[in-house]
Image 1 (cartoon, rainbow, N blue to C red):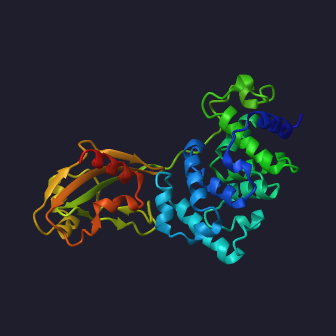
Image 2: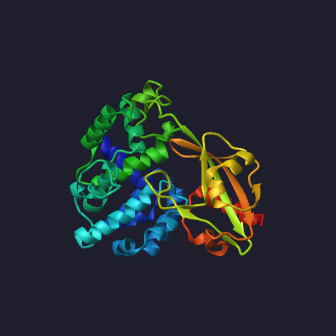
Image 3: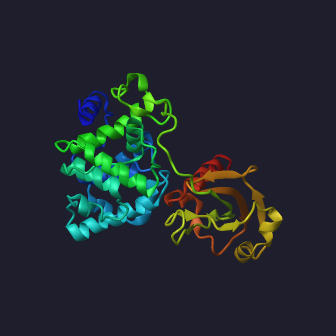
Length: 347
């Protein structure tokens, strides 16, 4: 039996029931694919339902302001995905009159859409035979065929894409793509795959050669950068604080934060009081206390943020113009959202 036939037969018996699989609407499929990048299905599900309820059409998403979109995205991480989603919704409305582009060639031109996402949308919504290759697919193919080319190398990316394309069932490409993704997520899992009950057990190279734990191969990761953040949490007598929008192309662009003092190490209270940013913000005497007694370590893909939250209490401050009552209206990084929850409980 052909690889694709065995795979699809398995899928029809074991597939996950997910809301975006009950539609051919490319807008909904696009939303789900962008949300599920770097995100577990269980976590992405609530966000998908929230987005489709609040933005039932691409016009609704395009007409929303960015801050609203980011607030609804809060907690999913990788916020550039949300900004690109919003940008592309506007692009679809302005360039395609709200009609979602219907070919891989046009879909991949949307901001934030790469080969995988364009292939998924084109195959599922428009039946175009373009193979998806994500982490699940890399794992299934590298194990089944015994391929040790690093999956994050340029050679590996090309090799696995060509292999996946050669295997796709051209009569039902969307089903094939969803099947191989589900197979990797449910059956051929990263840890403890269900090899004993696998329909490919007799022909899987990794199983026969005891390479399950070795494959797929990844080139060495990028070195993780350490950063040291000190947030100045202002609290005036009339219950006002300071929040500013993060600008530039770094992490959390478009999200809001408390005034930040970044250094090359974890600083003491004395070092904080001596910093230029602190003295510019607080020319007069203030009460200062460290909220978290232990450093909070927030881990991102290529950087770890060692964070301290300093609570600054003062009579009044001209630059403090945001009410604590409205603070939850602003989109903030999870690091700050978690602090706000703890702070609320203790105040």
